[in-house]
Image (cartoon, rainbow, N blue to C red):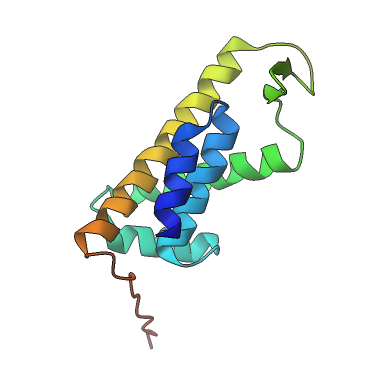
Length: 132
C-alpha cells in the first residue's frame, strides 16, 4: 500500500518536480527496486506499453530527476507560499516542459498501481533468468 500512498502524495503536489519525484517513488515501490535497469525491465514485463518508448521515458525521467536533485536544472520552488527560482528568473516554457515530464511519470505510476490492484494487492514477483 506504500506505493498507493506515494501516488496520492504525488497527486497532491503543486510543483511538477515534486510530483515527478513522488511518481518515481511510486514506480520504485510497485516494482520493488530503485535500480534504473531493473525498473526498465520490470516495467516492460508489467505494462502493455510500447517497449522502446517506455525505456526511453524511464531513462529521461531519471535523468531529469537527477539533474533537479543535484542542482543543474532550474525550476520554481514554492516555500511558505513564495515562489523562488534558484538558478535565474521565470521561464514559462521550461515550466510547461516539467509538467509534461511529470505527466509521463504519473501515467506510468498510475498504470503500475492499477496492475497492483488488478492483482488484489499482491506483491509483483519477478523472476530472473540467466541466458547462456
